[in-house]
Length: 161
Image (cartoon, rainbow, N blue to C red):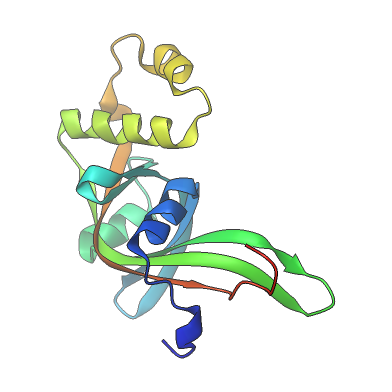
């Protein structure tokens, strides 16, 4: 890392950023053509997996089937610092493989993980959306298997944090 003082080495803080984040910008590649997409996610901490939902067809799925390598970023915006032309932030960059989930039980786990992660009242949403038998064949669930992650952040200002 170019600015070593900005590296976040604390594994707990990296996990906290993933826990608090709601969306991730993901970079994929097809041949020599880059593709970037921002998706909401659910973080399943026990398996170090991020889950996403998707349509059944589209460029994203075509690229993932061709090349599952992926890199994603979650940014925790801590605010612009007026008068200093600077921004306070923390971020996590994850590297891994993006794959389509085909097993219905894991698709359900992925959707449940997203609901738990994103919703203020997950129980009510589960009852509303999943209270009856749901057909998981109408959409895709993707997962990003994290190989490793790095973190970076602006140094805290004197007297803050």
